[in-house]
Image 1 (cartoon, rainbow, N blue to C red):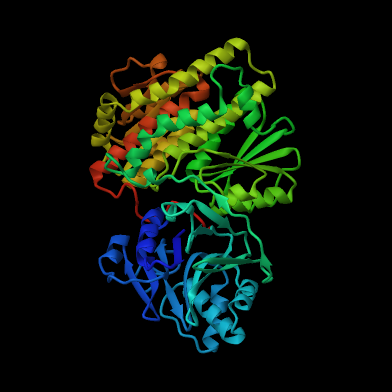
Image 2: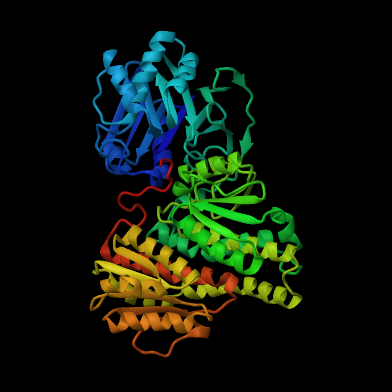
Length: 607
């Protein structure tokens, strides 16, 4: 859950490239950072704990044509300068994203060979192992082949060797690594955003492959050390997403981008004048499957739960939603060649979700990715991929990518309905109208009148030590996501519960003044849910009701936000916006670090 960047080129701008890259990668980890560059034929390492500005403030004005950099999310050892990357052992200097699982055994063996360790990291052990193997072989290719045989776990490494300051080495296994190609200069990085202002050409390494990179040459090798040819790919540059513009935080900007993202996504899949033929052309064929399993983590899993509700109700296919970290350790997988496993991940690098894809393939199940980052690990491993096209999401807490995920799941549902002829012409007209109107309805929820309501709720909850979210069905799943947002950025202990479960224990936690955010959008369950809401109110709760204008409640006891009404297929897309902004406004009042919350990172590449 870190970010790495490397540069080699004729222009002596390594330090600038490394810092620019780390700034773009900092959402992957931001508790320490460091760079290593070649200055006066020596490796010069500069590291600092805390955010990247702390590193920038101590850097000297050095010119260098080769270097590596790292921004860290601590997994082994506390976030201190000594545990920061790069790490140097003997002739080897490295930066590392991932986890070396057998580091203890390796460390014990290396100590017997005379190696001493200053940090608590597994990365320093990897550097020592590389140094030991290089001293034995005097050949980096042979060293990297042997390194893979001895190391267990996930790693993407940028490597500098003292004997060759004109070459940058890199190797990967179960961790993202991309090589950027430009005229007389080349790059490595955890993701394309780190170098996309310089080039849009890249090579993507597969697991087990490594590369030897100079200013004007890139050689790639398989796990056995044989040179291989790799395709050069191009990608779209998107520099604008890397600045906040008029917004105080990236998160706020990304919330406000959501109407445009929804429109862009739906315009790609739906011709608003036809009968969904375009949708059928651009979606996979779902007709062969008698079961769908969605594997995901965090917000993506919450999106999956909404997808389950929609697909089961409208497409009549049973759907299971599995937390990916649990799915991979189940004793029995009830999937086969008639099952579809959908992997949802913003980054496309989520380690547990990637493993779920591999397990699905072992059971001959087809796999589909719902991914935001092109050419990411999961995107390259699934049979089919649907991109959410949300653009770079810089805030750690997801908003626009989550909304794009639930939008795509609604489109998948619609595609299955259409192909099964489970939809009338009148329903098609109603759905097309709803899709056309939704961006404007989303804009309404972002206007100043509604913002004032979100701020009012934030004022009443930001000093509370706990908040509850309740709802039924999709409303409960939206509550899970709203609760997670509040936990992530406002650092408030919030929990989401199915409203009908309150009386089975949870209501004991309701005290005088306890905030309860109730989501009520389902016509079938409105009376039952409002009864549960009344129970919390009678126990002293301060109730905040989020409901659509069609179901608005006249009870003056509750602070009510009335959102626009749309078809059930799309209602969750409107409902999530108030929940996102309530969390944002609450965090703003608390003065927390909204874009980079404590203990969190954007891309979870470790278990």
